[in-house]
Image 1 (tube, rainbow, N blue to C red):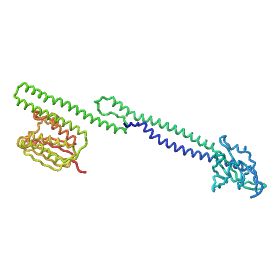
Image 2: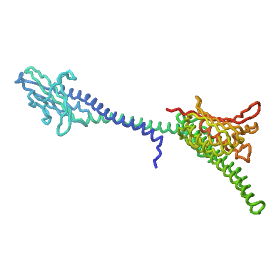
Image 3: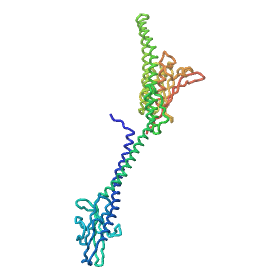
Image 4: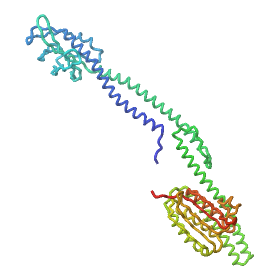
Length: 468
């Protein structure tokens, strides 16, 4: 089972992960910049040390015969040692590399003076090692002049890197703990904001959890965030559909219990009467058979009404030519048409609609069956289909007695049959539910001539399914 994700955890990871990655990259860059800044600052100290040593030099002779002399006590360099974390080494040599004074462990410089040095001096800076330790070295080509001669000295001053690295780390740590504190503040803000933003959701969840099982009323959440309104509206819509489905089921159970009770009671009385011998067996069986047929028809129509509601919850449908289906239905009921010797006329035209096959078939069958049932012997019956701009129209005309004004008030209501001995009163209710489910409309109107009803016209309009 997939574990549910936490909105709070998702936001924390989504916000803090990029910030943490940025802090790591920024810390590396900051350390390098701090080290470069410390190097620049301490390089100036090394240059000052080299100049101080250069001032302590003396020379005898000129050019190639110049002989350098150095009197540089180590105490002269103590002023340039910031603390005990670093050590300073120096070396004074002539241009040939012969050491005059200093530390022999410091290798002689073999580099070149930059064409554009950073300082107003012939100075170069480079990295080297002394006793296996990394050092930073400043090289100064220092002219030396005296009353007895003139020459050029190479002054090298080296310093270990502990102080520079310590300063860079201190700058990094001072910045890093502030950034970590900022991350903690951001995390706390995210938690508080999420807690506050999800408060309506938690309150709504608590209200829904406290509802009874049968309470499917619309959700009232006026303070829900705008981003959650689609979810709340969709949930309300689903609950509305569930409420309609539940109401339909309750109505179906109630109507079933009410409508089936009567034929079952009649059937029971007829069976008891037959057992007592109150009437001849053939007559008793005929009445029992008629009661069973009415109960069976009632049960079938009630199941059809329930199936309409079930298919309404399933939006899948197919493209169907209503004319072809109407022809099939007419062939199925042709024995009934022939039994009444009806003058049947069928007018058809291509009538594509999008519907469930069973729904369209049941709609056509019920309307045509009602027309046949109420048509007089030898009357006329018309079944016509045509396509219009507003949709497909089915028209069924019969020569029956029409609809009374009293029956019209409850025409499409369940169990509203005009003659309870001839039907259950569910046929038109089923037709109406099917038409509504397919997005159409239905009407039944009397045809009159000279103020006299001469028949009934049933018309159904369904949306036309145009090809893509």
